[in-house]
Image (cartoon, rainbow, N blue to C red):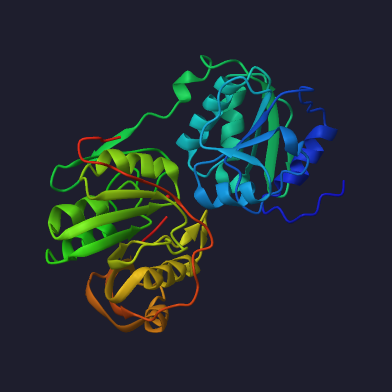
Amino acid sequence: MNTPQTDPAPRALRLELAFEGGLTLPATGAIAVLAPRAGESLAPLPRERVQVMTPHFPDHAAFTAQGYACARSIAPGVAAVLVCLPRARAEALDMIAEACALTEGPVIIDGQKTDGVDAILKALRSKVSVSEPVSKGHGKIFWFPSPGAAALAAWRDAPVTLVDAAGQPFQTRAGLFSADGVDPGSALLAGALPDTLAGEAVDLGAGWGFLSAALLARAPRIKALHLVEADARALDCARLNVTDPRAVFHWADATLPLPGIQADIVVMNPPFHTGRKGQPGLGIAFIRAAAALLRPAGQLWLVANRHLPYEAAMTASFRRHSEVAGTAAFKILLGEGPVRAAAGARTAPHRDRRAAGHPRGSRA
């Protein structure tokens, strides 16, 4: 086995061990890979047959850049499916049920112990005939012949409807940030935004749209609000939740500036976790992206957990910044007068605008 262990899972090594342990693929036909993450290697699979399906824009961009066929959705009839388990159990069960609907061939499950692979294996053993798992790198891989769409139909994820403090309903889905209720940090920021905000606005990391809906309802002088979100599932929910015709939707990496857009206002509740690992650098990247988007007199309104060290990044990216509100748990930072960065966007996002009458994440 010569696969370099650059895969953080390490998924490629477990795939090689699975093939040595008896996993076989049909000789022809596409192999769907559901939700692999950037940096993971799919080298043991025949590249020309792989179809990557992921809702995450950075992962979609990464595998596209490697020459893989990538899509938001895949039609049934593929030869086999590899499911890369996410952290959220309900999302994982939904992906497995979807995999069974996509193929009559083998369904391969790979995941880390920290993402609940042992619990998923136990749940599947009560439903289908599962291979012996292969363990490596604090994770497991196992497989089973697809029982068809109906067998695990009860595992499909249903949309979740929640209401905010004012009784406004919002649709979310399992696995999204704050899927079960409005995030208290976002609610705090929404309540602090002045109704005098005006011009072109951007919600970086918009999620399922709570903050955007609040800003548009509060500030009638906003001309357009760009919702930037890397998770296509969250953006789909936002399209349902934010019905104001001023909304513009971008499936994009929020840490990269949006080409052609200059904003007067940026609002955000940036993530600071990748999986279970805390990474304040994500929030710092959001702050830099906000500064690159803003006009010289623009403002950034940011909510964050109080312990997060964002003040140095605010000093580097804005001529003035201050804490304008907060609680024991959260702080709201206002940055004014962006320090213009030289960096430009590295990729162009997908965007769509809702015309009037034509409706169509972890953080603080």
